[in-house]
Amino acid sequence: MHNSDAPVLTIDGPSGSGKGTISRAVATALGWHLLDSGAIYRSVGYAASMAGIDLSDAEAVTRCAETTKIVFRDPRDGGETRVIVNGHDATDDIRTETCGATASAIAAIPEVRTALFEKQRSFRKAPGLVADGRDMGTVVFTDATRKIFLTASADERAHRRYKQLKGKGLSVTLSSLLREIQARDERDATRKVAPLKPATGALIIDTTAVAVDVVVARVLAYARPA
Ligand code: DC
Image 1 (cartoon, rainbow, N blue to C red):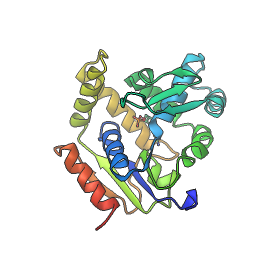
Image 2 (cartoon, protein in one colour):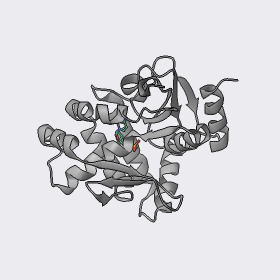
Image 3 (cartoon, helix red, strand yellow):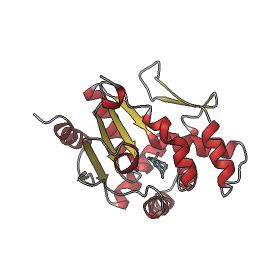
C-alpha cells in the first residue's frame, strides 16, 4: 500500500476532550501509527521560548517552526512517548498549561501552520494513522474517511487537565486552569486559519460523563464497521 493510501482516522476537539487518551488507545487497538499534532505545536512554542523569540514576531516564529527538530521516541519502559526537541527531552516541559498557551498563540500564525503541514502529513503510513489535533479532519487530512470530533463540558475538561497535571507533580489550581482552558479554546476556535471546528460529516461524541473504555469502543466500532 502506498503511504498516501493508508487509512486515516482524525480525532479533533478542544483541550481536555479526551483526544490524547482516546487516540492512543484506539491507535494501539488498531495497530496504527499515532500523530499527536498538539505536541508539534507545543514543541515549536517551547523551542521559541527557549530561544527567547518574541512570540509576536511572526517571521522569527515561522523560522523557528521550519528549523526546530522534533523527534517522537518510543519509550524503553512502556511509559510515555518521549518528545525530543532540538536534542533535548522536552516531554514534561511541553505539557504545562503555559506551554499550551504558547502553542495556541503561535498556532494562530498562518505561516507556522504551513511550515508544519508536511511534517504532519509524513505520519501517514501503512497500516493506518490516528491523527489527534484541532484541524486534522478539516485541513491536514481532508481525505480521511473517518472523522471524529470529541467534546466535553468546560468544567469536565478543566477537571481532567487538573488531574493530569497534578499527576505529573505540577502545581496548578482548578479555577486558573478553567480560565486558561477557556481562553485557549476561544483563541483556537476563533482564529482565521484552521479554526477548531468539526469537519463536515464528523461523528461528534460528547465525552462529559462517559468512561474512557466506552468512548474507545464507540470510536473503534465507527473506525472498523463490522
Ligand atoms: O492538543 P494540545 O492541547 O496539545 O494542543 C496545544 C495547542 O496547539 C492548541 O491549543 C492549539 C494548537 N494546535 C493546533 O492549532 N492545531 C492542531 N492540530 C493541534 C494543536
